[in-house]
Length: 314
Length: 292
Image (cartoon, rainbow over all chains, first blue to last red; front, side, top):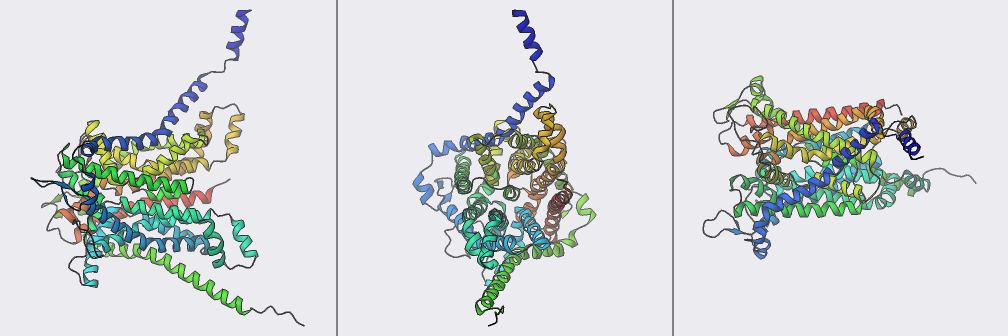
């Protein structure tokens, strides 16, 4: 009796080689699947590991957020006031957003609602190519094309300033905003447009009264991700902003950004020194802010489309 | 009484507004794209004279104020190749998981959020991570290995997302047909799903090459050097790279003749845009060829 049952079980056992391979692969791709989560946690852990000593030790939060004096290399009394760096990043990103938002949303509306056929494909490709220009090339453009242009046009002594880097950053953030905004507009069902047009609305009326309100969340997410993009940009800002510590009062002031500070100073610090740890602390700040921006954008629109990622990376 | 179909005043006004809006938004689009064309033109005009076979095939000399960029070109190829070796397998596995296995649950949402964040974290933070993790903790030192792994993690979202997209483009009926024949999930993926999406995956990989080649910040402290008199022999060596070289000769080295950085910028952008265009062309071609 017991023998027969064992025999049956063996006969019914379908766990052949293919089954085991299938099971193995299932675990393998699962590891790949969670790798992104592992890496994000890894980034947080490793930059915190290097920066933590500064946060718990030397850091004076009041000085860090309240003082514009970033003098980490001073022999007698190094100070770590990040206010000017935060102001630098904020002013450059702010100008970039002011420049980029109207044009990006305008372009997105045009591509999604007015252009069609070949024109539309061509415009999309050009926007994608705009996004493909490496940031160091943008920085170089700021340095060698925009700089003399600004000096000549506005009669200022230095052309590496908020205006220069803001415009460059605007051009860099525009394609990602355009692409995500266009995705959001495309996600509005055509039935909405058909209903509006059946009521006699023109295309413009349909776009403004029907499609835009329906795509509102996606458009907000587009702007947010554009902000995150500008905020985290490094090389272009390093090369085009003038890189001098300043609380800017006009667009012609040179500034220094958080990202650029890390890029410029990390090479000259000794591993484990206060200065080195302070730079990692700036990194933690950058990580935290971009994380919040991305999380907010994700909460506004559940999930960001593939074309956004394709373009977002730099 | 005759019914008139002539346009009313309201119709005429609406049509005018319509035309105006169209022109205005078209103009904004053009203004957005115009800078690229202007910039490319300027780069070609001013960098063109610096281009020569000598630029591509010789080493920099006289403190990088003359000579070519061969070591930087070779270095970029090294960095991109090693980064691809790391990111393509992980990225494709992740995409297979997300497209073929994952259900719509909290974990999947978390993974998607992580992917967006990997794509959104500033490149300099990736650099800090590379220093903290690969250079120091894993002890790779400043080397091609450390720099490439940093780049790989940074560009992972590109591979994952484009691969997932092309896997999902394979109709579900293909899978169902295969399952009904008694195939396991993996057999289905290997024999049906992957062969039908391989060209789409390739498109994503080409795009990743273009992204990786242009990066500067993540490699500055992890493995790229300002100047090296020799070519890298293994992944444990440092290397020069195109992107960093452009930064160095345009900001750090005095007395560089003006056309040299323009030439380097032109070569870099030509490399990146060529890869990008290839990827876009491939994508368009595949879309047109699609049978289902």
